[in-house]
Length: 134
Image (cartoon, rainbow, N blue to C red):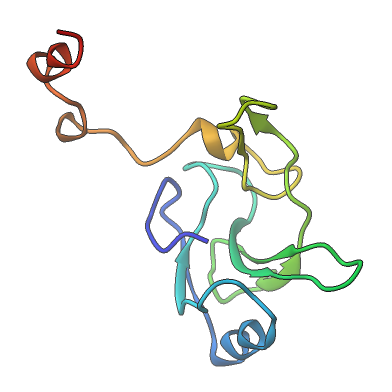
């Protein structure tokens, strides 16, 4: 779920019936009326974002409900769909292991390989970094 733009500039505004369908799921997120595509900027194919994480019950494991849409936000191909997660892991087996958090077969790099653009304001100045090692 991406309420902030991370990479791809495409955004979806959910229709009332989609918001209702997402609200009926036993999910872990508050339903958001608008979300950003979570794929890497410039990707091929449709846009994707997790619209709701569903708890699962009994033998059914938790799963993700995705919103998928084309360049025409309200055109054909727009759907809410259950998709399997990409199994790729960063630092697999380590305490700080991180999953890809994108759908299986996604285009572009894995979710842990890109993020919001970094500017000079995001980088600590050298004099401050050196203080950590004094």
